[in-house]
Length: 320
Image 1 (cartoon, rainbow, N blue to C red):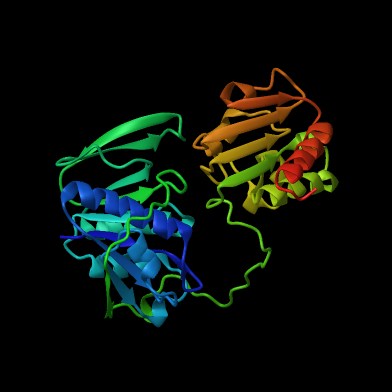
Image 2: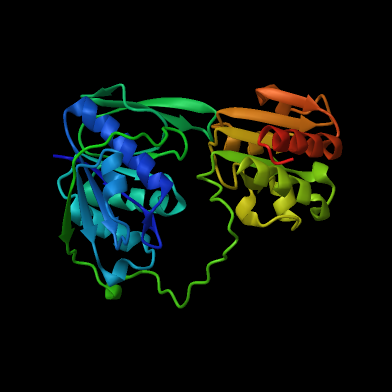
């Protein structure tokens, strides 16, 4: 049976995380000599993007009960479409991470979270996953059905175009089954990149001394086309919104480039960013723990280094 992938959407459009999950599903399918079937709820975007990343079939479910997120309803609908599936792949977004354990129960399947790489074997299904807040790697081997979540920005979005078909199906879920009642949705329109999907992240901590100094962080992020983030103490004292907090108790991210400004690098912070491909640390304390985890480090005053770095990048991009 095909490898099923939940293609998560936002306002009807496929998320980058959905394309990454489809790419991962295609890697499994290639090893197993199988195909990928993507499941999408109420999409408004056409399926070409999914075909481009390896989905041979797209099952569209149009159902008013699935308009607003409800983990139990989503799990029930996915289980109904993927009934009998050996493998279901989901991205590790907040929503899909809530769906995955419920789905594994419904499918009587093993649950494997925080996967970064393709499996080394499909019989048995053998794969590495991040464990202990990213401090360890666990190798698991599974016989039978499994539900897998793929860390965002870890496996990557890979084009692997195939010919695809669409099918519209109905599922036995209704608004009466909902565990959550949504009265209203107010979405902030910040124009900023999604932190968990960003390829580059510029983050700062208490070394910036106050929220009034965040302009230089946002300017550097704008020049780089990056998202902004912060350490937990900064979010706790209200300098930055909690949505920007990265770390063990915040968001776990894995960008290609993570720039940390004025952050000491406590182990709780590292747990949320150690999946980054390249880490650059700017700190005036040469003994800051973060330097031990950094690929590149600059010992210096952030108020001198960051503006100069921004200016040089502008020159390289022809913006100065």
